Image (tube, rainbow, N blue to C red; front, side, top):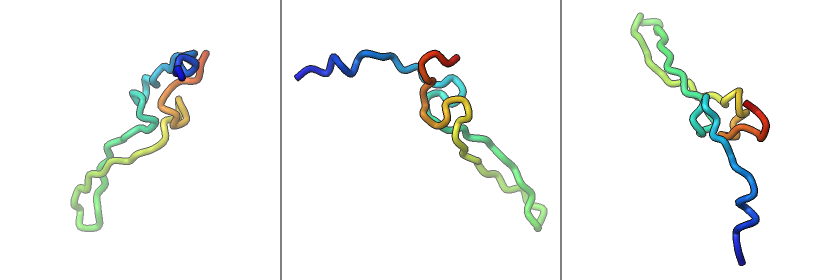
Length: 59
């Protein structure tokens, strides 16, 4: 059995999320003791909708 049928299309990794499907945003917050708390906010990539690759024909 050959896997040639699965090689029929080429996936283009999303340039915004680098093929991960998510964006990581560094954030700093100040708490009630006036200390800076650093955190990373992880969200779905809006360009590829979390798929990690662009749909065919999208740019």
